[in-house]
Image (cartoon, rainbow, N blue to C red):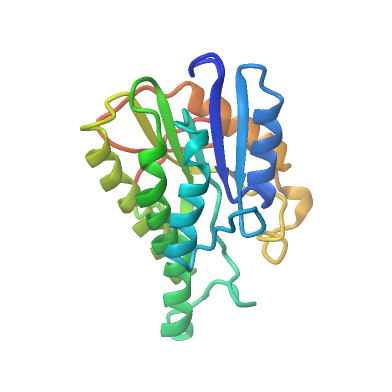
Length: 232
């Protein structure tokens, strides 16, 4: 990450997942990075998206190691409680919809609430959230996946709104929703042949390079791992 200060500090939330752990490895290999802090359900201060108390405690736990110049939230789930995305309107179920929003929208929004204050306010800093291309309303050509699509679209709005507010106090901050590509992981196994997927390291390297090239804008940005813009 050449665009960040020498000796920048990074925080990866969801650090045990396929993409999160790949980001940790890439950052640890970056000579410009002085340290990578990892948070997950298994960390010393467990962070669970369903519990704001755990999110707040995790933020307090790592606060002394900040401020951070890079925060990556790599949390989210496509299959929840053993159930994948709905393929038709007739499959909609209120409990499944609520769980999708809890994991993919509400939890990450509360992560923003407690962790954006740990973002450096004096120099260039990046807050990145893994999103999904299917969260783009204008890019929806196939339908289906009601809960996941809607939760990711709502997540993008949360990030955009948080960016607009935060930039008033942290004018050097960059906020970005990231489409990591279809990555070989437990999330994609039921839906895509793994030989057709990206390796986690390929996705992580692409996203880090894409973030490095971003400029400050008036709000959040939505890009894929190759740095291509995605319409909201």
